[in-house]
Length: 215
Length: 83
Image (tube, rainbow over all chains, first blue to last red):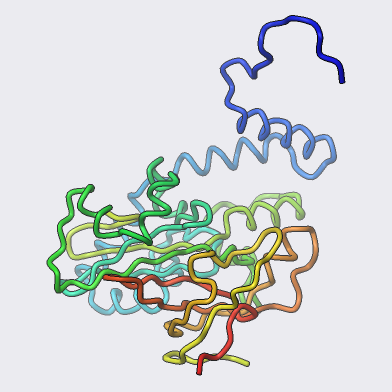
C-alpha cells in the first residue's frame, strides 16, 4: 500500500489501544447478538461494587470461630456461601493461613486471576509484569519491597493460580449458589461471562488481616 | 491415571502453540502433588470455541525453587509420574 501523503500520526486520541480493542470487540459481540450492552454495564457495575470487605468478613469469622476456620480451610467456597457471600464463579477457591512458620503469596503469572467477588478488582501492581515474574523468582525480594521481612526459618509458599478452569465441573450446580439476584440472562453470555471470571482464586489470611497478593 | 497427594510428577516440556495454562517456568520440572482438584474442561480447546472434552483433572503441584516453594495448578495431561 502506498503511503506518500503527509498527515498527523494516526492515534486513538486519549484512548489506550487496549480500550479501543475492547470497545471494538464489544461492538462486534453486540452486533452479533452474543451479548447486550446492559450486560456489559451490569458486569462492570457488579465488579467495581466489590470491595475487600467480604473477604475481611470471612477472615474475621475464622478468627472467632475455630470450627468455621476449619471449614474455610477445607472449602472456602462453601464457607463463603455459608456467610451469604458471593464467592464468584470460580469453582476452586482456596483459603490459606499464614502462621509463624509459613507465609503465603498469591500471583497469577499468566494473567491476573484474582478472587474479585470477595476482594474487588486487583490493585494495578498485582497485574504488572514485574510482580508476576518476580513473585515466583524472587518472592522474598518482592516482600521486602512491600515492607515484609520474613525470618530465615519462615517457609515461603507462592501460589501461582493460573489454571483457567471451566466454572461448571461435574456435580457443581450452575447458578444454584449465585449470590446475585437471578435475572434473565442470555445463556451464551452467561457461559462466557463465567469463563472470563472463572479463573483461579486464592485468599490468604493470617491472624492479623486478610491478604490477597503479597501483603 | 489419577495422581494422589504426595506423588512426584514431572511436567511435560513440550512446546504448545496457542492458549494453555502451564507456565513455562515449570515445564520439564519435577514437583509433588499437593492437592487434587476436580476435573474441568480443557481450556486449550475451550478457548477456541470447542467443548473442552474430555475433562482433565486439575492438581496443585508444589515445586521447590531456591528458598521458596511455588504451587501451580496443572492439568493432568501435562503430568507424568516421576521416577
